[in-house]
Picture 1: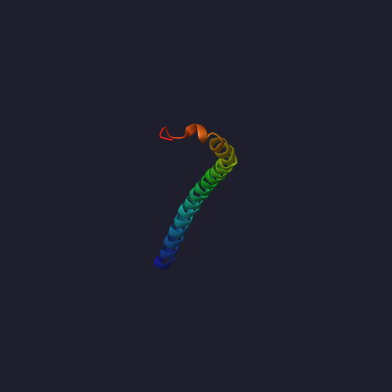
Picture 2 (picture 1 turned 90 degrees about the vertical axis):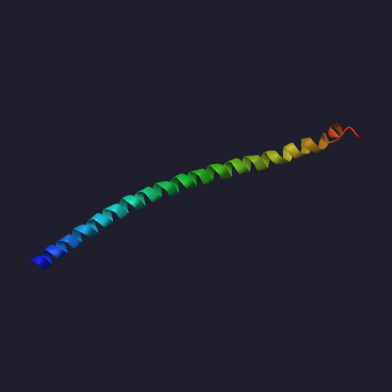
Length: 72
């Protein structure tokens, strides 16, 4: 009897651990999904900034003469 109680307790402990591991895995999956969404958003933002950069630089260089320091 003691042997079967020991096996039953070990089985119960394993079921509890499996349940906690499943919950942890679900939480980690949610974190990964959220991080991927953040990465996608940052990539879109970076792409937009790169597209705007040449326009801003072109305008800045054309007005460089207007922005010369006063000592020239």
